[in-house]
Length: 132
Image 1: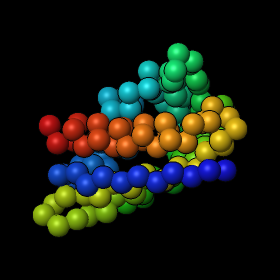
Image 2: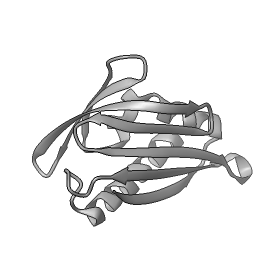
Image 3: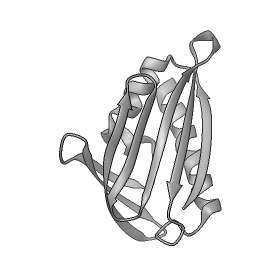
Image 4: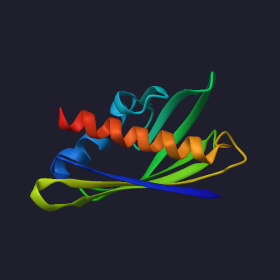
């Protein structure tokens, strides 16, 4: 397994940042490769994405949610990956959003540099969304 970690500081309180992220069906608003996210069970979600002209489908299970602190997830089908998104209060009501992901470099995540850039872009898009 490979790993990547990115973070960004957003001009929003922890509660607001957590709430926006925890509504997983919002993901296509800031994760540009995602085409669809929908809940299929209590903690399981269907994700459909497109990268490089190829469509991917995965089932994601939210394995841990600590309100205003942390969300952990793992795939249960499709490309193998897992991750944690944490929210830390910063000065002046800002929030540090940290995204850590473990992934199988032999599955669909072959290009680590491209994945790292995509994750940074997703965080920047999240910042734009939460701050508007």
